[in-house]
Amino acid sequence: MSTQGYDHAAVHYGGDEELLAVAVPFLEAGLAAGEPTVVSMAPERAELVRDALSPSARVEYLSTRDLYARPAAAIKSYRELLAGFVADGAAGIRVFGEIPPAVIDTSWDWWARYESAVNHAYGEFPLRSMCAYDTRTTPRHVLDDVARTHPFVATPGGGHHTNTGYVDPLSFLADPRPMTPLPIESTAPRAELANPRPADARRAVLATAPLDLPADEVDDLVLAVSEIVDNALRHGRPPVRVRIWAGAGQMVVSVHDAGTGPADPFAGLLPADRSIGGRGLWIAHQICSQVTLHRDETGFTARLAAGQPW
Image 1 (tube, rainbow, N blue to C red):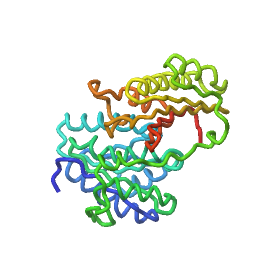
Image 2 (image 1 turned 45 degrees about the vertical axis):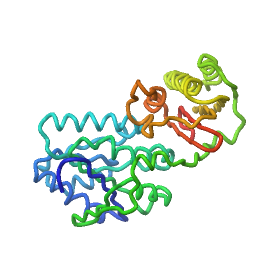
Image 3 (image 1 turned 180 degrees about the vertical axis):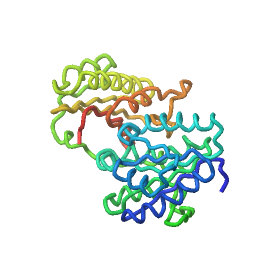
């Protein structure tokens, strides 16, 4: 295939041998072509791949713990990495990686949006990437989303096939997704506000913050909530309703208005165009531990979390 443009493939594996049968030929081809070659996997699987390659293989290994803290931050980090490779003269780049199982289990919804959005976000780069999913542990609904967000499927021995189930990001991201309730939402909210000003929302978050939630996370949530409430008042439709839950080491805030939400399907995941708005969602995606966006017949909801609400 051409080295121009983004080639985004899913890998399904049921054991170490299957994983290596896809990863090794892919990475070795990149090394042979002199392409920057990157592995971003959990330590045990990164070591497995490292041991299967030549000791002299010039592969860059990235920490999934740092890279996949938040989807918007991952996109930003990868774009900077890829731009650096291109600036250094790379005509092709290869990345073999995985989204950490822990975040798949706790916050898949915004990572599903990530897997779709990157088809657009990395489109300017001469990148081939493969995203590995262990079929023994990955839930069925996640694999269904994987099938809709990857244009290609990679198979052992160098196989590379067009994925007929792929859905364009503009359609995938615009499609309403159910918002799975977080455990804390089964309890009564600590505070409910109707049509609050951003300052009212900030004060309410500060007043209900648990003492064991780090101050910097509280401050980040205060900023994010203020931005989202301002968005709802400026761009949404009344009434605007804010609900706040707080528990041991965690806070969840939902902001609902009767509008349809942002027109930009990439809102929050890519830097906002100031001429059309979206700055608040971009900020929230950078600093909250989880952001969920939901549209239904009642309007648009942005749910923001701090700490570990799962």
